[in-house]
Length: 334
Ligand code: UT7
Picture (cartoon, rainbow, N blue to C red):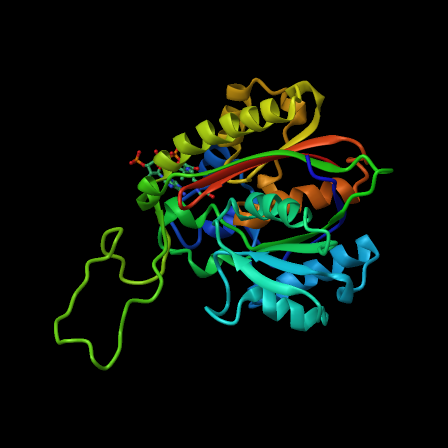
């Protein structure tokens, strides 16, 4: 257990709403197929706002909520698989935007599981007496990777960002991170892929070809074996929550909420059945936002906090999965 308090949350969602009906204009699909197979009705897409911009907007809201000045931040972590630059990191850009001069900054890419990994890391950093406040921002313009001629993937994703400030907890407040269970299964990485740049320089021999690790990809567009990801997701979401709960000595019935990565309503329902959770505990906001990758869990968390539906002292489980393949769960007292 680490005395860690989520001191503030904040999100940024682009204004552009793309409905299922609008999707039918670009691919052979229907509102009926998308809603019944995924639970998604609409998603937000960037109107050009870069990943760093959305991150900084979400971060400002989380800092205001935490009543902290940017100069009080020791670390800024940005979880993203869709940065605007290979370098500098999105976290360094956010630092400059906020004026958080004291912080050290880095990006973390665990795809859609990024936020769960970051929360685990934040708790570990907070064991260091020199670290007091950590900003985690999950910011994703996943639309940059999507092939809008592929109906099996393009209907799923949305853009957005969300941030939390994690501060060292005091003895007076109940907040704590109780347990985490993280994992990766790199051997099944081929089921969800987006390729980066290939080696190219003036000294490359003519015809030098190194095959792509995951089959030929002409560019960065995302490819996915949906059913394989689906089966993986149901298994790891349920099992990682159960393992984290056992580690924490927490019965699932004690959890106020379970917030899963928002990828498909059917995945969430099947995982809830597998872990024998009460459906009333499960948060599903996929209908309005689609899959916003690592931002999906903190967007839900922020909504609950702002709506006054999550109170100090209540226990929450979050669980994610994504490309890598990666997965993880964390249980904390808000
Ligand atoms: O953050 C992690 C990212 N990824 C995920 O979490 C995705 C996990 N997987 C899934 O959510 C589901 O597998 C999908 C939503 C991607 C697909 O649903 P499914 O029930 O597994 O459908 P399917 O792939 O078995 O396809 C069934 C049919 C196919 O047609 P045929 O071959 O049966 O004629 C597809 O071509 O549905 C067709 N199809 C569509 N039809 C209308 C696939 N996408 C669409 C579409 N509209 N958008």
